[in-house]
Image (spheres, rainbow, N blue to C red):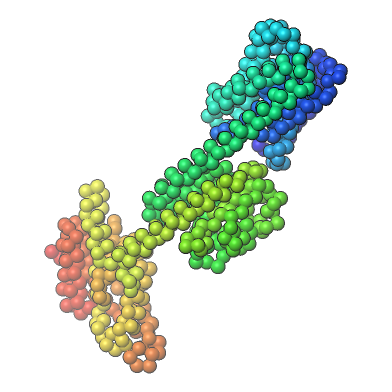
Length: 571
């Protein structure tokens, strides 16, 4: 909610709440003669129950309706209204609502005031009466039923209005889960409230103890039951997420999937996954921001956690949980958002070593609980294993596809890539060419300067080819001093021009090497290359034919005609 809307809500509360309370007192004056102690006892019961809400699928339930019904039937509308307002205040204070969400005070107090006045008014219109129980429950049955149904429906109407016009929520349903749980909780608690009303007439204050204590214990047991259910649901979801991320062998996909699932599982406004394995400071490798989704962080980023909550988790290897901003604001240099309140940070461990940190934040106070640390720690362990598996796979794949000396693709990978191009040629009949080049008199380099110096030339040439070709094609080592390139979407004439540019880039720029066979000093040498070009499909209908024709062009058109030149295959 915006600051302006927050201000308007408080203005509306000041305009309507005091006059309505005064009007209720004026038209429904209470008779509290010798009953103040009972009223305070009932308020104590309401306050205790209000401090034990149960969160069921995102809906906060606190079973004060039954007690408020007993207060209403015994002491009238004004007393019920005041005690309900005070119970709502206790509920919100117990939640420790932040300044950002301070609008919840006037919104909830006005909403429950309207619900109390509407339900109570309809009760009186239906002929109901308040005071001591007369002994005839039948006369109170119809007005009480009207009171109950109006309590549910008016509350839902106001909630629906707030979601659409105040909170601007979309796709909100009137007959949703909130109404269902409200109806269930009301149906369970109102009979207890009616029983309390009847017993209070005959037994007095002691009835509050007889009914109130079991009611509080039942609320506490329900709270514990749903807490355990939430933990079980989280653990089941954790297992599902673990299976999903360990099935993938792509690191980026794993991180993206993990953040999507975790931010759906927890209340999260900002989330960070940090690398702590090969760096001297924590570096964010993937993050999430509400409204933007998962954000990929570049390798060279300034978003590094030099000091703060995450770095403390890194050094200690222990998780940390903070329920409000005042607990952690002196521990960080302002990296976390200013709106953040609750923070949970856990280490990712592999072989007892911290290899990363996962930090979640939300603007809500007390949003995370101790069992969330356990759940997130299990997820962090799953993530560490999944990333390790993906890295091992990527490294194995890299070694099988790359030349260990030059780090270029090897010929086996290049052949598979070329085969795939031919398979997709019917779908995308764009021309593509290969360039095959061989260094001239390279044996002389090895004999004169040593094989280590020759390897330096090959490495330098590989880097130069990748630099020159860029994203226009793929460079691979054919074998020995031969290299092969695939140019996609290049005509034969375009490919010949690229080949000529490569020939000049090789011949015109020297290579620096160490003279291992003589003095070991560094010196520069010049080399040249003979190059052959063949283009599919006209100069090769399959992979082997295309490569063979490029090889023929290189030897017959370039090598045999003086070297250091580019030749095209002629069929």
